[in-house]
Image (cartoon, rainbow, N blue to C red; front, side, top):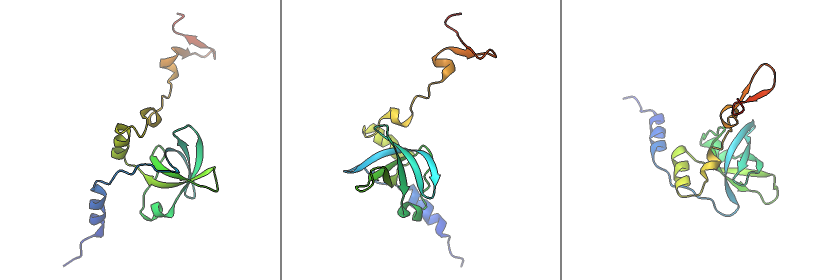
Length: 136
């Protein structure tokens, strides 16, 4: 009788609902801005500051992939104020729960990009000068 694949077991474990992890002392929620390689990324904290984040071996061993735009939990370092360590990655359902519990601000998740054509009513022509549609 052939053995069953262990991949199915791993997939079933992912479908289980995880406990929601909240921030504690010396921890903060952050959004990944850019991936730098070598287990490093730049993040944006809730206060607007950007820092360098180090992805630990625990996340790499569990094969947790972190991408641009993900919400993560980071821990501050006592000895290096410009670097933080990534502790946990939240999935989409957990992020929704954090916003419902008002742990995260909805404007932090989706900041206004400010579309130039719709917000300012400007149209660019070949003359390199913007024309305001309100003046016409």
